Each structure stands twice: as C-alpha cells, then as structure tokens.
Image 1 (tube, one colour):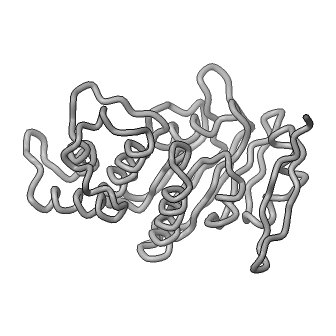
Image 2: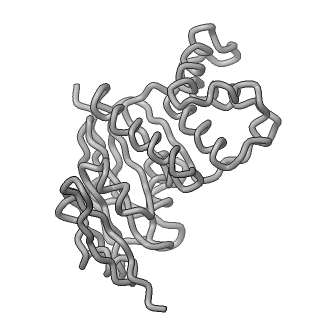
Length: 246
C-alpha cells in the first residue's frame, strides 16, 4: 500500500484563502518542507491537513492516521511528559479504557529515540521550550502512523537537537516509508533532508517541486523579501545565507 498525501485545489484560511488553490502530491518515504515568510499560510495549511481547521475549498486525502506537532501546546492539566506522549496512543485505546503496557512501552520507546526518556516523570509545564518540543515530537511518533506533520519542529531547539530531529526525520522516511511534512524558516534544513519543497511567495503564489529546483537564490529572495545568496561549503555542498542591508 502506498502512503500518499494528496491536496487537490486546496484553499485554506479563516475568512479568505491565504494562497491560490494548491495541488500537491507526496509519496510515502518522502519529506516535504514548507517555507515562506510570516503570514503566508504555513501553519494554517498544516492545521487544515490535521483537521484542526476546516478548508475553504478543495480536498485533502491520505491513508491511515497521522501524527501532528504544533508550534505551541498548553495542556489544561498538570500532565507528566510521559502522559503527554501517551496521548499519541489515543486512537489505539478504546473509549474509557486505560493505556496498556504495550502503549506505555511504545511511548517510552518514542522518548528514548529522542534521548528524552529522563524527562518522563517531569511535569510538562516545567520543561524548557526545547524539551516541550521534543516531547511533542515523541507524542507524534507514538501514534505510529504513516503521515507526520510538524509545524516548525526545530524552532525552539538548540543546534544539537535541531540536528537530532532532522536526522530522525530522514531515518523515519527511509526506514518506515513515513510521509513527512514540516514547516521551517530555515532553507538549509530543507536542503539537508527534504525531497520536495513547497515555497509560498508574495501575492498568494506558490512553488512546489524537487527541493533542488525550488530552492534557488531568486526564489528565496522573492519569498522572504531579502537578498539570499548561495555559498559553497567544504565537501561539495552549499548553504543559503541572507544579505541584510544594514
């Protein structure tokens, strides 16, 4: 079975569409990065795919369940980090039933994979921003779905943990053919791990395609309203850097 995500003439927003109707096809085993300046619709798109917001038009289709990592999450009660991760098992647990030993083990393994098992008994609201983000990623992994949606998953993380998360996403796409979509303000993160990139431009325009084709100096400069240049680095790769005018 192919685990695909298909968006057909999709329009999302609150009162008016944030971008022109979007057509997008992502295969299982692929990573898709979503980039664009603030207010272009990155978060709204992911929230719509996750069913948090109702689309204004078009169709969203995918197989199986999904894991979703929002930018912000504030629980109403004082849950431990392990409790938060166990919430990812909700679709596997019957109504009014308690999590099984297997559910707990899956949650603990998700935390172990991110090297945060030592946080299991800590109250979630006492964790740092980066620790909370890693806990929410573990919760999404505990769902054990084939679609993973992450809204700026590295935004609150230090450099070491940014690398750890990006490496994990690449491994999940390769090993279990997971379909991964993540938003970011870092073109270099897309360059490192994304097969495809969706780039939001001014005037509700967008570009979608292979990352190497979409991420160009001209396209990024247009998207962010600042000159962005590409620099070569040792090992034969390259990186993007803004040229601020001050």
